[in-house]
Each structure stands twice: as C-alpha cells, then as structure tokens.
Image (cartoon, rainbow, N blue to C red; front, side):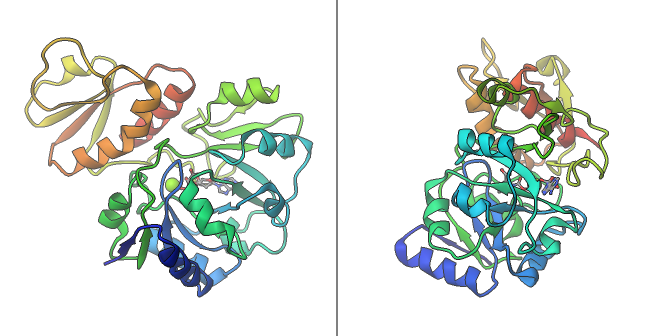
Length: 322
Ligand code: TXA
Ligand code: MG
C-alpha cells in the first residue's frame, strides 16, 4: 500500500529522490491530484501508463515551475506566451510544439506536448528544486473519476504506487482547461476546465474555437477526450429535474444547489448557497463518496450552461456515457 506523506522538508526531499530514481509519486495540484514521474525518463513514464491502465495513445501533460523552464521543453509563439503570462501559474494547459528532449512516450508519439504550470504551494515546493519537469496525468485508474484528495488516490491506486504527497483537498477540484494556440489566428479550446473559456477570451482578447464541447471528437483532435471518462462505478444519469426523477430508495440524487424546503432520502448537494465554484470544487469528492454507498444509480442535476457550468456538464455527460 502507498505511503501518504505530509509535505515536511524531509518528506519532500525523500520524494524528490524517488522521482530522481525513476519512481512514481502522486502529487497535489490545485485542479486534481496527478501521478508524476520524471518527464525525461521514458521508463518512469511508461510506468505511469501501466499504473493507470491508460492506453499508450493518450499523451501525458508536462508540469513545470515557470515559463522559462517550459521554454526548454516546448516552443512558444506570441499568443501562447501571452496566455502563459496571463494565466500561469494556474489551471491552464497549453499544447505546444515539443522539443526533442521530451521522450516520445510522454506525447504518445505526437510532435506537440501539453505543458502546465500549477500554482499549488506544495506542488511548487516539490518541483522548484527538481532538475526535470514532471509528466503527470490525473492520478486515477483510466476513465474513473479524478482524485481531489490524497485519500481518493490511496483508495483507487494505492496498490499500484508507493508514495502519495498529501497537499490537502484540491481547491478547484476540476482538471485544467486545455488550449492549443499553435495556430495564432485560430486558437482552439480542447478541454473545458477550471479556467473559464470566457475568462480566457476576455483577458487575452481572443476568440477560441470550441472543439471541447463536441462529444464526438476523435483521436485526431484530443487523444484523451474519449466520451466515457470521469465515470463513477455507479451508473449515472443526468436530469434537469432530479428530485422528480428520484423515485426510489435505490438511487442517489446529486444536486449542485441545496433545494428549498425539507428534503429527505438520499439527496446530496454540492453547494448550500448555490455557488458554482463551490459545487465544482466538490463534484468529484461527492461522486467518490456516493460511489462507495452502493446505490443502483446516481441522478445528477445538470449545471447552468455557462463557463464553469459548461465544464462541469461536460464531465457529467462523460460520466453518464455508456
Ligand atoms: O488539471 C490537470 O490538467 C491534471 C493535473 C494533474 O495537472 N492533469 C490531467 O491530466 O488532467 P490527464 O492526462 O488526465 O488529462 C490530460 C489531457 C488528456 O486528455 C490528454 O490526451 C490531453 O490532455 N493531452 C496531453 N497532451 C496532449 C497533446 N500533445 N495534444 C492534445 N492533447 C493532449
Ligand atoms: Mg485524467
């Protein structure tokens, strides 16, 4: 079973050495926990795919401490540099032309690499004195819900890895937004995520081509965007009126907003005051918890279709996919 370590100086140095030796460490980020390895070490990265049961066609994101380190593993044009300056460190992944130093296994053979610079303080403490970037997908078994606590990682991958760095619950609770700005005149949104599309567009003064909303997109667009993804074991269905659809004791009803009045019987909600940010931060944790309770079905309320709500609906639709 994996050891869950708190971020003391001693533990951080131990984990840096595990990474230097080609080991795997689950790490906290502000979005979700990642399963990290030295991005320059092909066999360490191979072990990430093994531990997750992830297809070799689905590339890994490289995590860095700064724009200048990112520039040593990928090339930036003016627009991607502008986006990095605006939103890094933070929940934005940029797809960039890769440098030779990144092994093919990291990018699943593509000539581009996903690069992200997280803001989580524990992650930054760990990476700032490492000599290499960290390749890290979300630390969940392939297609299952992403982890937002060290305990989620321990429950789902604890028998496959040795170390989990506990940095507390992920504040945002939803994966990074992915943008491919290699073509400056036609930047593309590849995955909705914790950074809103409108916020990117407004602050960067650009329009994004939204390829993330299409649930039928294939491998050519974004390798990891298979429709069924982020799924609990318990079958999940979406509803705009979940309390009405919720008829039996055998199903759980998951609302994003606390309903008015007295509510009884297997009804869960994500935010008491109807904050989408709070609901988003708690969605995966709630799905993990409900998944342990043995219901036959989860009836989940759709979020309002706006920015963060769209990102959350995207995850619910994929969780509901058969
Ligand atoms: O918030 C996050 O992004 C988290 C934390 C740990 O940083 N990571 C994460 O990684 O969600 P992962 O591997 O679960 O999702 C990354 C997605 C995958 O769908 C992958 O296919 C896509 O990014 N991706 C990676 N490199 C790519 C590339 N070069 N071109 C297109 N898509 C890429
Ligand atoms: Mg993932």
